[in-house]
Length: 245
View 1 (cartoon, rainbow, N blue to C red):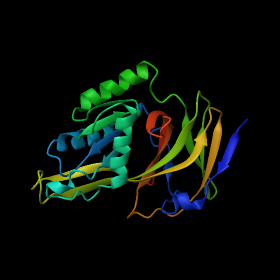
View 2 (view 1 turned 45 degrees about the vertical axis):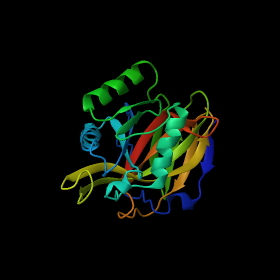
View 3 (view 1 turned 120 degrees about the vertical axis):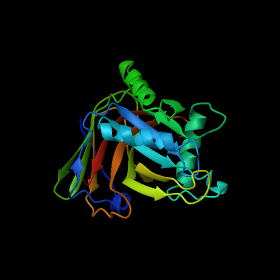
View 4 (view 1 turned 180 degrees about the vertical axis):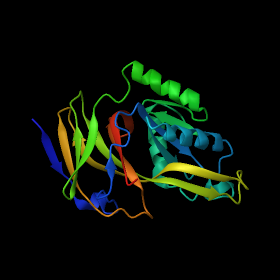
């Protein structure tokens, strides 16, 4: 039986899907979350690798800018406390004593230094080959003034997240460890909202279409993500992307 959940418009007050093209990455190999900072001298190679992977069209890339390096002389213009909290929550879930940048989280399952495009691709391919890829189908479609998120069947339960992002932004860094560099960042996360639950059955979530404010986001990723008993983020079971381009 198909479950249907109606989500309040408050969850998508800034998001418009009336011109959106749904499912730009129809069968993603995986999800790469990069925790990075404009104030970290080790991060530019990772930002470049993430941008290149985003161009491949087969992996969902999300850049989470953290705020704990802001004291080094440059305040990251994209950083947020919420992004930092998500990274620390991953650290707790994975039994790590601390966090670092540039840290890549792959499918919510593994972590690694995120500077090598080849290593990141290889690791995601390995996860998929051993069954730890995106195994639950997630798709979207427009229906009048609504957006329908359809999630297939699988095992267990998970949260349904909407991760809003800016597609690309070029930043001239004037102080700190990267002083003098101009870096282009891709898929910069601006907000994360939980919009529903999935309990292993085919599920449809209905969201209202709204006018996308280009100052806030250029689209979003839909993630089907499990959590541990403490509520920390865990394996991502399925995902798709909606953009306005």
